[in-house]
Length: 307
Image (cartoon, rainbow, N blue to C red):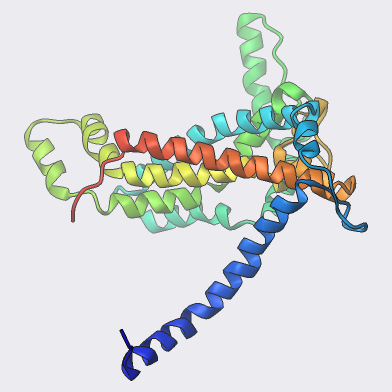
């Protein structure tokens, strides 16, 4: 069917508006992804022409002990940082949703840390978690001394960045500094909770916890799902903070070696760009798989209400 002049004009206008985005998407997303896929089958050091090696990079990857160490560290970090971040941010959002004097000030205070650049955040927490001079241990020592005095135990403040048992936990606590973004999203979701549900619950004699469990959380389930996906993607790509905290290394006993860090080492320090591309694709597949699992689970636990 032949298009009219007006239809051609509208089509041209639409293509003109979508053109910059389409060009950026092709150049900055599709092209790098295709190159990553191609180079993952090559021995490529950037400075020399790539040579096809087939599945060698993937075979080496799945027999690489450092890769499995990085993967286990990444999954450990994600398994604890995501639930902890969701709980803390939801708790803060519910508190900040109460109509109390100075509510706007408190909201600003909790949101501002999430605006701090990652590098500055890492340097700050590097000092806070210092085993000898850090403020965290300065606050812990009086508590531990009191416990030791009462119980006769010999508890000592942990060496957060020098002991493999505590390094990842220190990094997990560091992540709680930036929950402000999730808090803002939760606060927006709380404004959409129907007021009449709370009023009906008050008439039935429900207390705060009953209303939270049976009204607030089900209504917020789409927001919780969104923050879970965002937290999952961020946790599996964690790089800047552990890299700076470990001074460019991998921490004690490689306890701060993550997949993104190992990818960086291979690509820019060992000049094994093909191997790094294989790591990147495995990371991409892992994020895709876990996101798909979370999406399937959301069908049972996420409830969307019609407006």
